[in-house]
Length: 342
Ligand code: SF4
Image (cartoon, rainbow, N blue to C red; front, side, top):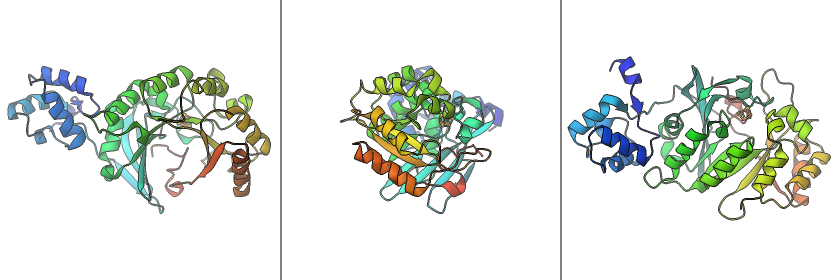
């Protein structure tokens, strides 16, 4: 098919059942065709409208005049020695984005991107250093989940790839709806984690509209230090984010984690551990301590192993559950903070 004509068609993946009903009406199909389309898209995972064989031939032809399924294969894949695979997908503003597949015993997690680049400008992050190039559509987010080769093995999804998910809230909420609805992929929200720097109003919206797990990028208990690493601290201080989180229940249906990258001489001494423990006191959460992965042009250095262990033990002794997260995919630049869409 002529590439230009094809590109002007709208993708069906990413659409909700209600939106598919509008598509059905527009194509002169019966209302129940929306449920049929949802089943073909999300359960049977077809790649062509013509494969939707319980929709009449004429109906499929009318659909295909304006729509495509919208599935696109990754442009490139890079495999790590540890089994992690980084996939490159077409993004926005001429920039590609990455999704990272992380198999781990009986779990297989996909770390998805929500934006090409990022506006948040965190000093330690490759994505942030690229600047912002555009939001991904719901179809592009869902395509990452459906179009990796090991899609059927996935057990978990984390919105921790490129971009700040709450900065592309509409598409992220729609993607979560597709992932969790009975007419969609029918996943439990307990299999999904959204990571955020903590834009307070957007975070409240995410908490109110979904039941997914939440991960907050903390990185320092001190406002001034955190502000030096994460400019968002000035607009939405971590203290205010934690106040908001205290209004919600993280003891039962959903989990809360604090992400804490440890840098040598920056945020790795006992004073930081004690201040972090005081800040989190009474909040049902765990702390994930993350090794820093060096990125070009950034002078920050990872904390020593022994220092990380002591930091973890100090938090645990103060009653805050803390673990050191295993690094994955560092050799293919797929680890935390290393994604650059290249
Ligand atoms: S760490 Fe997250 S929020 Fe910060 S710049 Fe990178 S992608 Fe954006």
